[in-house]
Length: 166
Image (cartoon, rainbow, N blue to C red; front, side, top):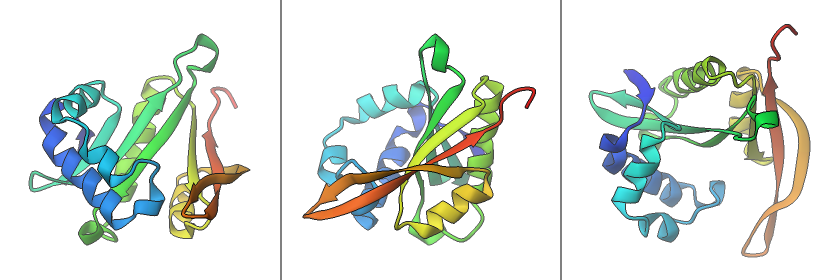
């Protein structure tokens, strides 16, 4: 198993796993399958070169991905957002999510981000337990965060905060 930042050379595998995620769990992501499929591969490669996505590889095959985005303003550079986090269904439960999250947290800390934030559907108890294991705590609710086919979903805002000197 190898955990590392993704690069432009990983674009095809990243796109495949992203489309797999959107097909398997369409309600868990804000992007639709059709929207993701329409993104040209070169645009994905350019986005991956920014170094915000991480992946777990097993025998050269990408099995899990997660994204980390830093706030850019001077007053908020200590904050980062964990974006889409996904382990392929056939690879779930095999211990790939923990090292991926640990690598993302370590990269955030190395870059001076000591507060990480994410949103997760309140109904996604498995994901919530996972994030809590990694030090995230619920600090708010976003009612009607998503509405799909008349179904309103509440999101939880989770934060992991380790201020220097605290």
